[in-house]
Picture (cartoon, helix red, strand yellow):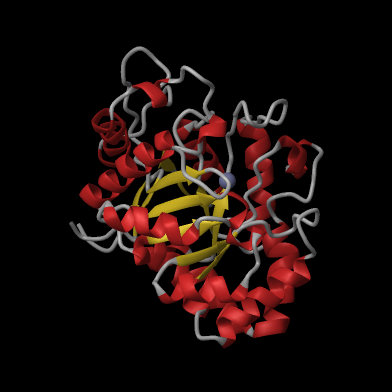
Amino acid sequence: MSGFVMTVLGPADPAGLGAVDAHEHLFLCSPALPGDDFGDVDSMVAEVETVRAAGIDTIVDLTPVGLGRSVPGLAEVSRRTGVHVVAATGYHRDAHYPAGHWVYREPASVLEEVLVADLTGGVDARDWQGPTPAPTEHRAGIVKLGASYQRASAAERTRLGAGAAAARRTGAPVAVHCEIGTLGPELLDLLAAGGVPAHRVLLAHLDRNPDPGLHAELASRGAYLLYDTVGRIKYRPDSVLLDLVERMVVAGHGDRVLLGTDVGRRSQLRAIGGGPGMAVLGETFVPRLRAQVGHDAVDAILRANAWSALTWAVV
Ligand SMILES: [Zn+2]
């Protein structure tokens, strides 16, 4: 089987994904975000309905191992809303795992096999927190990894290596959390050393450091620039992000840009009384971007770019 995207409901034709929001979380629980966990299916169905009404057809849930991931929940949300959902496996940065967590203890070979099992067999029903694996019928479609601000710790390097190996073996794409947009070049080097070329990598949160020169350099290497803090005004106005996308399009890197909102807190979800809500991308940002860079550029970003970024390589 070649040229597919793996959704929680099975392999899909990339072009069938429609418009893609490339970074969200539908179920999340992390010690790094105390009191901000969420994961109620009915609420997430309501939230995703607003996303669909705003013109988004596919959501990529980038929740890695041990952060409250619920792949049966993702499948139910997908079935009830008709929105495609791509689930992740992988490991986040150290801040999301308490001291003593097995991700610090297990050897790289075990860390790698956990991811390969989620990608090829089915994601563990208990998110690898139970005594024995219980594979579901839902496979992960992308490997999510992460590093700390300005540095990757030894433990993070081990997990990045395990994630790269799992991606190399399976052909799955890789998304990597760049804390406040840092470490992009180093993370591409690390992943390339593990057998994952830059064109298989989505660099998340680069828009936290909206530096057009740096981004052009990363795009020239082939990496996808995942601008995923749309609507997060505390970071900077959306106008900065609109200008950044325009700079990339004008510089010929429009084919490397992806968009998402990365709603990762209860307080950001409209269905449970927060804001701006996951629909801010389709409702507010996309119309402004269309006015600024034109329909063709926006359609490429939401569709063709995302389709190729999420398609598994033949191994
Ligand atoms: Zn995220």
